[in-house]
Length: 391
Figure: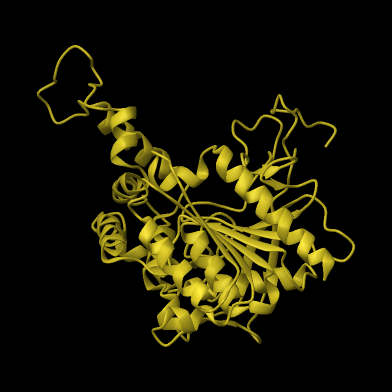
C-alpha cells in the first residue's frame, strides 16, 4: 500500500487491491451443473474491498455484467491506466461505501478473467476445454459464488447488487438462497430475456461461429476468431447505447470531415467507434466465453425455473428488501420489465422500492456517473444496515 500512487485527486479510491483465487471441487467431489454435466475443479477469481466487521454482517456482493470481471474498484498497480469497472460507485464515501461495507466481487463461472471457463485447461486432456466445456446457467454461476461466500465465512450478505446479467445473478441469489440475502439492488436488468434480446445474442454468436478461425471452438493453438468476436461486440455495443446517446455523440459526422471516401471504409464516426470497440474487445476477451455467457443469459427465466411459470410464485421464496432501478433510454431491458418484477414482488408483500432514472445513455447508464443512483444506493444500504443492526 505504501507504494500506491493516489490516482484520485479527491482521495476517494479504495487504493491498491489484489486479484485472489479460490478453487473448489475435485475429481472425487465434482461441481455438478444444472445440465447434469460436471466440472472436476472450479476456480473463481475474486476481489475484496473494505473491512469485514467482527460479526461478518457488512458484506456486499457485487455481480458484474457479461464482459466484466472481479476488478470492481481501485488499482492493481500504481501505473494502471484505469481503475476497476465500478470505481465510481465502490469506494470510501461513495454509493457503496467501503468505509462501512466489505465488498466482494467474483468473476463468473464461464468467463475468461481468472475463473474457470472454456479457455481453462481441461485436466482430463491437458488442453483448453474449448467447446468441450459444458453449457452453464445463471444458477450454476450463483451456486459457485455461494461456495465462495461460505468459504469467506459469511452466513448472510447485507446486500447483493447487480446490473444487467449481474442483476440476473442477483435475482437468482434471492430466490435460491433467501436466508442468505438481507437486501438486493437490481439495476437495468430483467427476469428473462425478450425475443429481441435473444435475437441480438444469437446474431452475435453466429458471427463468432462463422469465423473460419473458430474451428468448432478449438482454436487455442492457433489464430483466434478475432473478426467474429469483434463483430459480436459491435452488435452488443449497439444494444448498450441509445438512439439519443448515439445522436449526441456521433450524429452523422464524418470521420474525414472533408468528404465521403466512396469506399467501404469507416466514413462515419459511429462506424469508426464501433470498429474500435470491436478491436479493443478481442484483446481482452475470449470468443468461447462470449458464447457461453450469452447462452446462459438467454436460458435464464426466473418464473420458469423457480415458480412453475409464475413470477409471483418465484418471488414468494424471497426474504430480501429490494431496490429496483431502470433507465428511461434502456431499450435492451426497458422499464416495463423492471415494473413487471416490482409488481410480482409487491404481490408477495416484499419490501420493494422502485425508481426509473432519466438518462440518455441507454443500457450502460448504470455504469456511468449518476448522482441520483449514488444517493439511492447509499440511502438504501444505510437503511438496510440500520435495520439489520436493530435485529
